[in-house]
Length: 187
Length: 306
Image 1 (cartoon, each protein chain N blue to C red):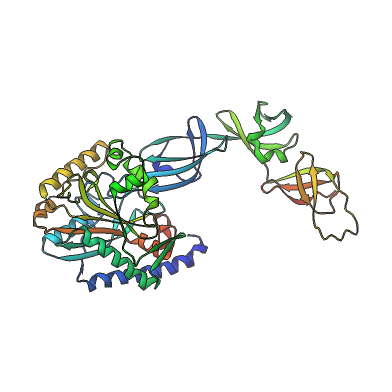
Image 2 (tube, each protein chain N blue to C red):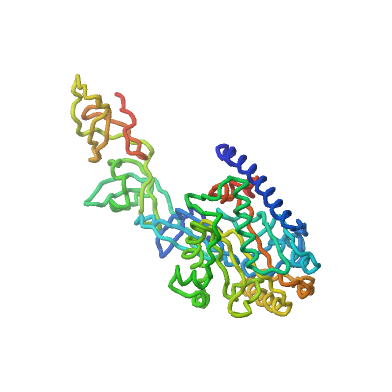
């Protein structure tokens, strides 16, 4: 159990049965008045934010989030299904909970699935993933337009800018934190 | 402290030292004596929301207030003190559990005299530190050469909230409304003097003779930041004792230490002439004048760095 005095940026607490991340925190005390703990919080499932002000001595249940290594199996409609490689337990989550991660996830990829009370609420991807280019214009030799990049589509349907020499069918490395091209996979 | 904040802190400490010099000169030129009173005391004022740190069987002072008033009782007319104070559990962008307080007291005066002192002090610090009569803090500008805006607590609630100050007290949301709705509007453009608090929030201030529901207390605000708290001092020992007992009961209900009654202070209170006193957060003053967003930026070391 946390109390008001434990509140700080980055703390994860449970409110109305949902996990929240404290995104901003201020200790205030009006002259001769009582200490007030002002927070901004982000719902870790829906992403919605709220402002709450607490007094001293209030208590909060920690949002106990669990990280489990799972394998991505398949997508059905907007649901992505993952399997715990040790227990073979399967969980699925909606596209909206995946956010931008859905751009970088391919079958059999190992990811960290974030669970809150047994419910999958998000994934942590490796910083770099290898994805195959499924579509891009060939490099026009003698192109003098001066452009040093061109659009390419990868196997997840995600479109990004790549250097002109990248060809269809090649494997490229993408930085999942920025969504940008990093390098090509040789061989 | 990360190395990148070190140069900023170095220049802040230089300016802080200069500001303290200006403040001392300001008061000495006006006939004030700098007093030093013990930091370790047996009986802090039992304020409901200010917690003293124990030191053996005594406490570290939360303010030199009681000792300064005893000096008024002893016949001193104009006194000031720059000293360290300790308040348990107070830590934030504007709070350190150990901080520096500037207090000054005038005999034969009331809180209106202190309002003028505040305006003159701000201007004196400004001309010595920046040479400007305008202060800019985090993008907010304040003119210091014009008189401060004088706004009563009643009017502030009327202007910025949907409740009266009395209703806010009854519904137990006075502090919340003050922090979230009122304070952000104060001290923008010119300093704000927020004055005449409900008697229930009068602390050690005397009630107004023509309206005993109100206490002669004010707070000084610049850029939404509370800088100082002032009273026309309550000098009636019977009323002071009654308020201390109420405060001790409130502390007791909250499961807090009630301290022992400061008897020498209560015994000497009737010897104090009509007086006024004020406490100003010196660290915050430095933050405001140097436009530094965090109290950590204006002290040599924070507790976390020790």
